[in-house]
Length: 476
Length: 96
Image 1 (cartoon, each protein chain N blue to C red):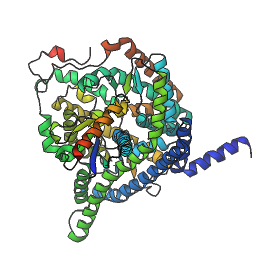
Image 2: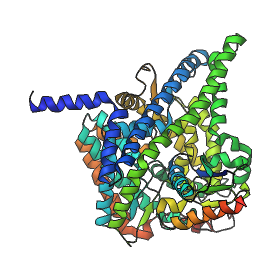
Image 3: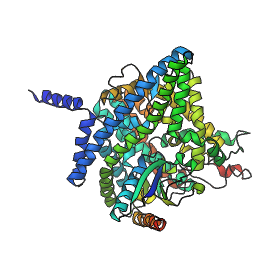
Image 4: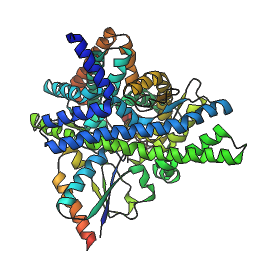
C-alpha cells in the first residue's frame, strides 16, 4: 500500500470507529499530556465514550417519539414543523465528536494564549466546556467547505471574535451582575449582544416603551413552572400530541398522546444528564489546562472568562426567558417558512438573553421585545442550518436509523454568528480570510478603544423612570 | 444523618458539574456523609425543601429558605478553600 492509501485507510478506520470510541482515545492522550494519573485519564476517557452512547440513545428516543407526531401534525393541522430541535446537549456532542471538534480545545487555547501574549485580549477563557461553540462552527464549515483545514481555521477565527466580544461586554456584565474581574466568552450569549444595541437605542426613542416597567419577581412567581424542563416537556407533549393525533378514537389517541408526553418529559431530563457525563469526563483536562495556562500569566490584569450560566439566576434573565418560552412556540407556528419545532432548547433561552438583558438595563419589556427579535432570527437560522446539522449529526453516528427527519437546534443551530461563519465557509478560503481580517480588526478596535469603547452599565437608568435619558446610553 | 447538598447553576449541567465534583471530593475527604445533587436555578422557584445547603454558581432568590454558599470560587480558583471551609461549616452546624 502507498502512503496515501495508508492514511486513507487509517482515516476510514477512525471514521468507522465513531466518536464514542475515538474520542476516548483522544481524551486519554490529552489527560496524560496534562500530567493526570493514568487511572484518572482512563476513567475520563471511558466517561466521554459513555456520554456519547447516552446522548445517542436519547436522541434516538426523541426521534422515535416526535418524528411521527410532527408528521401527523403537518397532515392534521397543516403546521409543518418537521425539523426537530435536539437542543444544545446534542449540538455540543455533535461539535466535540466531529473531526474538527476533537482539536477545538487545543486550537482555542493556543489562540487565547497568543492573543493574551500580544495584548489583543484581556480574557483568559478557562471555560473549556464552552469551546464546543467553536468546535460546532468549525465542524459545520468543514462540511460546507469540504475541508478539514477550513474547519480548524474557522474555529480559530471564531475564538478571536468570542474573546473580543467578551472584552467588549466585560464592564457591562461585571457591573450589572456584580462579578468583578469576570467576562463571558460564551459563544451563544455574545452572538446576540449586537441585536440589543440598536434595539435599545430605538426603545430609548419610542414613547410607550421608553418608560414601561414590569416586575421580574411577579413574572417568576406566575410563570415559574415554565422553567421546569420536565413539566414543560410533558405539557408540550400533550399539546403536540393533541394537534397531531386529535381525539377521534379516545383509546388509541389517548395512548399516543400520553406516551408522547411522558417521553418528551424524559428527553428533557435525560439529555442534560447525559451531557453532564461528558462534562465530568472533561474535568481532569479542564483542571490541567487551567493550571498550565494560569501559570503562564500570573498576576496579569486579566478577565477570567466564565460560562454565562453564572448570570442565569438573575431575576430579569429568568423572567425574560420564561416569557419567551410560549412566545417562541407561537413564533415557530406563525412565522412563514420556519420549520423548526422548538423543544429541548426552550430551556436554553436564558443563554440567548444573558448579555441582551444588561444592555436593556434589566428592563423586562425591552428584553422581551429584543428577545422576540432574537428568537425570530434564531428560528430562521436554525431552519436554514438544519441540512448541515443533520449531515454533521450523521457523521458522528447520531440518528443513524432516523434518516427521514431533519434535526437542528436553537443553540447553536440558530446562532447568528455561527451562521455568518457558515456563509463565509461556503465562499471558501476568500470568505474565511475576510472574516479573519474582520475579527482581528474588531479585536484591535476593542483593545484600542479600551474602557471608553466598551459596553457598560449605569445604575440610573430606564428602571428609574425619572432619570434623564442621556445617562441611559449603553454605548459611548 | 445524611446531609443533602444542592448544587445549582444555569443548566444544572455545566458549571454545577465542576462544583459538584469538588464539593463531593472534599466532603468525602473530611468524612461528612452527604448526598450532592445538581439542579437548575429555574427549578428553584418552588424553594429547596429537604436540602441542608445550596451551593450556587449564579444568583439565587433570597426567599429560598436554605443557606446559600457562592460556587464562583470553584470556577475561578480564587477562594476555593475558603468556600469549602464554609460548606463544611454549614454541614457540621446543621448536623448538631
